Every structure is written in structure tokens, then in C-alpha cells.
Length: 406
Image (tube, rainbow, N blue to C red; front, side):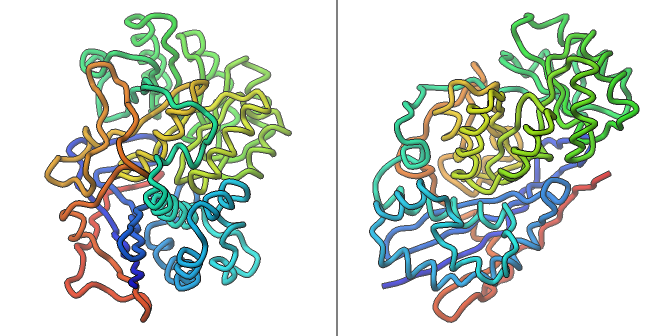
């Protein structure tokens, strides 16, 4: 009976770039993990971003090599899948598998490390149980036939081209520039073209200051903005409360809310009206589902978002949440079909968006409904068997990342 793990460090070239105040991206930067037990495999993914959680693909790779995978495989072999699924739903991944994180000596493991392991385990269990991922993560919530997705205007494309080519529009997110005059003109142009019932949000990616935030928010509100996302440096609780009170602008938090503790602090400080739930940032599907339930209980709105340039499992993970969350403010849905050439795809079938309607539909098959393609092999970074982690016989391509932060 075989147990194997394979780690892929994926740096796919992007056909179109993506720019915003915190980063400039021209390649993907994800870790994909495949776990195999006998004839069943599960695949998971994380997309660490240093400006969000402080993690990188390098740091998560190092952390993964300290995880006792023999203990994980031992549990997967000795506990029936239906019992493990119930334990995971009840307590979450870290509580179900505490032995995997004993090496952290009381320090919480990084959210991306948990996400990478958890998504692979969930996919494996769902395949063994022959159920879709949504049934395991959000049981009792009926699935939707489709969900509309938002369109994001980043700094690599002009507003007129965006409006001419990216519709139909259900929700628009505008990535802020370093020029408030440009941002006001952008919001005004969008409002001029779109119906009033299409929400518009400006994402500042922590680029405003306490001094500029109030006048900026007032000007954008006058131009027609509905929300601002993460306007101030991370976890600026008092300044965020002051901004909301002074302007009446609704604030959605992203980088400030990575953990349940962050969410509780934000609520206690009256610092936000909504949160951005991203599976990788928030520590996996189970933690993301709990964050959504917390948001509902506190009367907060929530967006189901993505990290830019996710490559497969993460996209379908967030869509599984979205398809059981009719009350989400909006869903980003992933853009792998726009970012990457079909010949570079590492999963099949590709997670597509119906660009005629800008909607996504449920996946077919158990788990995330994906298998790795032969193209994934070129990104193999490490393999694990009983002897531990080993590099591949043929080294993977060195990721040529083009991300800069400021």
C-alpha cells in the first residue's frame, strides 16, 4: 500500500499582467500539493503573498518539510473517511490534526501552510466519499445553479477599455492608483456607464494614510463609490473606525482579517462593514466557512475573493463556498482562463468563467473536480515517500517571479 506526497511550485507566465498599489504580478506563485493513498489522490493549493500574511512559497515549503507527513498518512489510513470528515467539520483542520503542528511549539502555523494541507486532505476525502467539496464544507446549505462574479479594474488597463470589453457587470472592484484624481475620474466614468444597482468598490490595498483617508473617501463617495477595501495600513482599528464615522463610507477589510482573532478585533473596534474571505489567506476552506458564519452572525457583509493568479484547486475551493453563499456581497471567481494559456494549464478541466454572462457554475465530480495535467510535472519541487522529502530527479524550473511590493 503506497503513500506519497508531491509538491509543485508553480510559476506560470501570465498572458496579461495585474497591477495594484501593493504588488505588480506577471507570473503565478502557488504551491500545489498532491497526496496519494493507494489508488486515491487529493490536490490542494495555497498562494502565499508576503504583503498579506508574511508568507512566501519558499517559507511555506520550508514549513511543510517540518510537518510529520507519516502521522498524516497514518490517520488517513486508520480513520474512516466519513469519520475524519465529521471531525474536520466539527473542529477544523488544526484541531483534527494537532500532531502535524507540534513542531511549532505553541506558535500558530501559517495560514497558507494549513490551507495547502487542508485543501489536499479535503479533496482526498471527498474523492473517497464520492461527494463534491461543498457537501463536506457547507452541509445543509443548498447549492446554487450559478453565481455572478465581479470584474476587477487593475492598473494595467484603462477604464474605457475595461467598460467596453469586460461586461456584463454585476459588481466592479477598482484597484486604486497613487493619484486620487485618476481614481475619482475612474469611479465617475464607471457610474456614468453602469446602472446604479451595480456596486462599485475601490481597493486601496493599504495605500492611504490616516490624513488622506477621509478626504479621499469623501471624494470617491461623491463620485459614486459604494465601498472602500483595506484603505489603511493593516489593522489600523482606531483610524478605520474614525474613517467610517467621519465619512459614512462602508469599509471592507481584507489584509487586516486573516484569522478569527482579527475578525473579532475588527468587530470590537467597529472598524468595518464587511470582510473579504480568501481561502488561502484565511487558512483553508473550513476556517473560511467559519469566518462567513461569523460575519453573518455579526451582521457583516462578506466578499468571497481570490489571490491573483491562483492555478486550480484554490479557484474551485472559493467557488464551492460561493455556490452555497447566496448572501455574499460579491464573488471574484478566479481568472485562470484569462491569465494563462490553455497549453500551460496544470489542471483539467480548467476552471472557466462564462464570459457571456460573467457567471460560474458548480464543478462536476467529487472534491474539487480536478486532476493534474502532464504540464504540472515540470513544476515538481519535492516528492515524499517513507524515506522523507526528496528533490525530483530532474529539477523543476526555477520560478521567475515578477512581483514587487511597495
